[in-house]
Length: 92
Image (tube, rainbow, N blue to C red):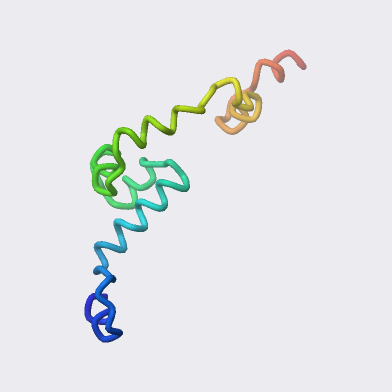
């Protein structure tokens, strides 16, 4: 990558490692899923992955600012998790 960038007269392009970190950063920002990135990067813990892609504690905390369990679609959640919701149990 570095050689290709140099051939194009670009000095603002990093190597493949930079691309890997950039992918991880943007994947996390879109999906907020450190565990999947941990697996993709073969890291031993999600905290290592977040540090690797330079996600700060403040950014993690910011994801909680407008989060509420009241907005969760609980019946759909239980179905997704393989269980049966209380509403479904009452129908039998």
